[in-house]
Length: 398
Image (cartoon, rainbow, N blue to C red; front, side, top):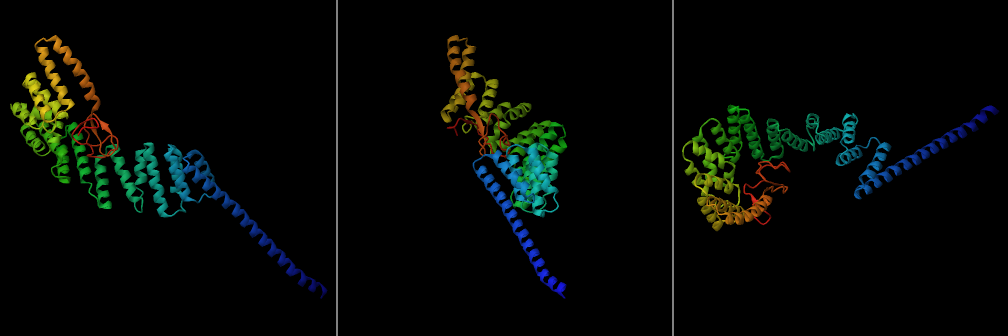
């Protein structure tokens, strides 16, 4: 009886000690969790402060420390990947996003996000085939639309115009937006490539598709005339380009030389030249003036060229017209062997040529990129139809 009584006393003591030990272990674990959480918060806040201070190297070190403390933090991994890509460390960004995309414990939306970011990494690294594969994995969610935009950009970089047409068509449905202008240009690019390879049937089909996307498309109209020239049909070329001459004369400089050649083949060169002259009142500072001046010199001579430039200077004065007038005067003086006049004119002419060559530019309305020649697609920002067909002569010119 005495032994049983002692056990009865000992059992509550043992249970009490066990309870105290469990409570102590819980409090110790809570303390360790609090310390770890404090470390995470400290590193996170430190990383954010460094980011705000634009100290990206130190910010990355701080955020990497947080990622080590909590490998499950997907948002932090996305932030790290974006930082790596922004700093040009594409390989590290790829590793971060590959790690995320391979994890099985993340939500589908995070997997799509990881595939999108990985595609952007590959695109930045120039690994276009892998970029395409990753971006095509984003089939739903908030990153589906940005992935399609990235694919469209990539296909244009690759000059894979048929895939670009598909991507633009899909984007049009997703965004409820009209991409027909871009699609028409993509078909025009296919037509240009086909004509270079002498595949005139494919070129015609592409031009017809461009007109189907955008009726009366200016570039497609120009290409239709070029196709007619390639098929030795100058009359059809003049008919096609007549639409440019009547409805969109600002683009005449893109076809002026070919226009003159087509008229020459039909023995109508003077008629073709007279039609171009009519548009110099509106284009007294552009490339059309250069081309008309060249053909007037060749066909009618320097005196007629000088008269033409005098008329242009009266209606739309420009540095280009003044330069051309001096060129005609120089040729007249040269024909008359007037050495003194030639020297005087040449001094002014050289100065004006230097000035006009440095100022005459086409300017992108989207990014401001300036170029000596006209582009349908800006080399700076890759936007379409952002160059005015009218060349400027410096900041103050129209």
